[in-house]
Every structure is written in C-alpha cells, then in structure tokens.
Picture 1: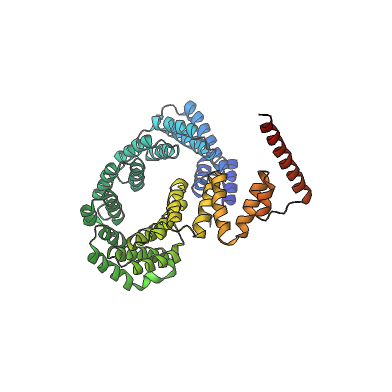
Picture 2: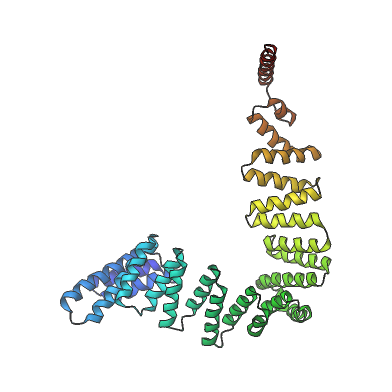
Length: 408
C-alpha cells in the first residue's frame, strides 16, 4: 500500500529542488489515492497558477501550453471547492476550464457529476450526452445517463441510451442486462427476454410473464450449481429463494412459497420485500389478518407510516385481540405525535393481560396530564400527599359546580 505521507515528503523534496513537473506528478498521484487531500489539491492549484503566470510572460507564443495550465488550475480549484462542499463554486471553475478546452472528457465528466450531486438532473443529462458525443467509449457516462433518466421517470429515454450502449459495446453482457431490466420495468417482457444474459434476471422476467415452467427450468439449473451455496454467494442464494417463492406463488402452492420466503429472510433478514411477499401469499390463502399485518410491516419499513397505520388498522379489525398489532398501532401513532390515539391502543394492550410496559406508559401519560387516579390505576406510584391534594382539588371543583348551578 502506497504511503501518502511519504509521497507528500517526496513532493516537497522535489519542490525544494525546483523540479515542479515531478512535484505535480507526485501530488497528482496523491489525489488519485486520496481525492479529498486538501494539501495536495492546494499545492497543485498553486503550482498551476504560478506556471500560468510564468508562461504568460516568458512563453506567450505557446498558447496551447498556457491554456493547458490554466485549464488544470481551474480543475484543481474545483477539486478544492468540492472537498469543501462548495458545489456552485466548483461548477463555475469547471465551466471556466471547459471554456479553454470544450472537448475535455475529464472536465465534461466532472461538470456532469457536479450537476448530479447538486440535484440538477436535466443539466447533468445534457453534460453526459455531450461527453458521449466527445468520446463514445465512456462506459460510466452511459450508466449514469440511464440512472438519471430513470430518476426522471423517463424509461423510454433510458432505454434509448441503453440500446446505444449495447450497439456500441456489442460484447458487454452488463449493458444487455441493464437494457433487459429497463424493458422489464416497462412491462415489455418480449424485448427483455431477447436481450437478457443473466439467468436470475431471465427467470424473474419469465415468472412475471407467468411462463412458469420455463422459469422452473432455469431455477432447477441454478439450484444444481454447488457454487450457489458458498458463503461468498449468499446474496445470490437469497435471490434464488425469492424467485423460488414467486414460482410457488404463481402455481398457488402457498405453503411452499412461504417456506421459500423464510429461507430468503434467513439470509437477507426481514425487509419490505419479504413482508410484501408474505402479504401477497397470505392474501392468496384468504388469510385477511396476516395479509394486512404483513402489509403493515412492509409500509413501516418503507417509512410510510400513514399507509402502515391503515394496514394495521385493517389487521386489528380482522383480529381485535392480537397484541402485536395493537402495539404497532400505539407506536405508530406516538411517532406521529398523536399521543391520545396512541394511548387508546395502549389501553387495549393493557386490557389483554395487564401488560407492564403498557401500564408504565399509561401511568406516566396520565400523571403528566394531572389525572392521578388513572395514573395510579395503571400502576404509577403516587405519594399519599399528592393524592390528598388531588382529592381536595376535585372536591373543591365539585363544590364550585354545585354552587354555580344552585344559583340558577
């Protein structure tokens, strides 16, 4: 592993000797290893600025060299601004660099990515398109363009870029799979199957198209591969179980589908997809409660609390005495700052089996509300002095009410 500290020392030594070209080479190496190294970036920026001034006076006739150093100065200054999260300044610096060399792939890529991280997706798209026009071999530009078009919900445009990439990089299976996945998202299974190269993706497309037996042939082939069960391939094994679950679901073999989802969950841990699959399976089995219950967890993990509340409420209506559902509703309402609604569900939890946690939450709540009688009922320890004072206040209030109405 290269020692960045040692490289800094070497660059400093070269500067002391007056070898600026060598120092630039070393500082550039440091930036490649540690892109956020502010010392190296600042030194490069200063070196290019000084060389620019020197060449302006001594070598005016060589315009290309002068402009190249100006270009690198602005690029280095943009890097410093990026490290300091000053993206607008960095964008302006890269624009200045591109004014000197509009065909620079380095500058065009940097500007496109700066627009992307700044949330200016349409401008980023324009810059990546220019980059591909300058150099059609920029693989990353195609991938980032596809990603940007997908984020802008423009799948047709993403497909257009992917098709262009497939045509240009004929032997690249990755681009064919990207294109197949885009067709899949669009619901065009025929075109997806024509280009797909990956067996997992092919099985997924076939299952979605309900070509179950063709998908099963691929799944059986995958299952026979001993490499699938190696530790380093556990993500692929999880993906296999998910496809197997979908196959059984399509065949309405719901118990086997649930078994496959459990195997998937053992590897990937519970996640929105696993709960979604369970919800669909239980729906197919006609078990309303478990279907609603799993949809609730799916939305909860997706951080969609309002929809989670709706599903857990449906689950509660289907099975009013399920304690876990009541607790989920109590917590969801509490997280939504709807305390009184939350307490209503904690009451229902308490009524089932005098749950200690529910009692503590209710006791603390009613104590804070000043209702010491209810706080005591739910197990909150109240000092006798506090109870007497509360009783005195209640009696005083009652006397005032009687006095008020007796005067009528």
